[in-house]
Image 1 (spheres, rainbow, N blue to C red):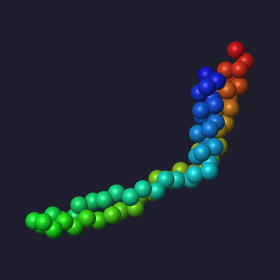
Image 2 (image 1 turned 90 degrees about the vertical axis):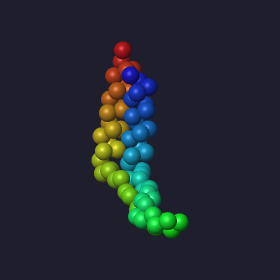
Image 3 (image 1 turned 90 degrees about the horizontal axis):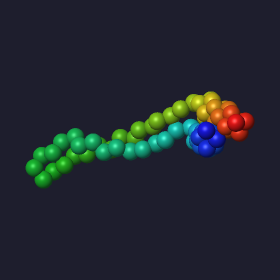
Image 4 (image 1 turned 135 degrees about the vertical axis):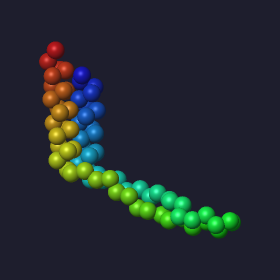
Length: 69
């Protein structure tokens, strides 16, 4: 349980530092013989900063609970 708590603490800090992830996808629009038309789309997956705080607090609680036993 203590290792899980430490992992959650690190994950929570990372979630607080980085508030989202950007990535790019390529979509095939048309394919006419040898001619291909592709469209690149930018996507963003974001999360609020307080989610990182909640994960960090849960990790601290698990680390403390694992230490007491």
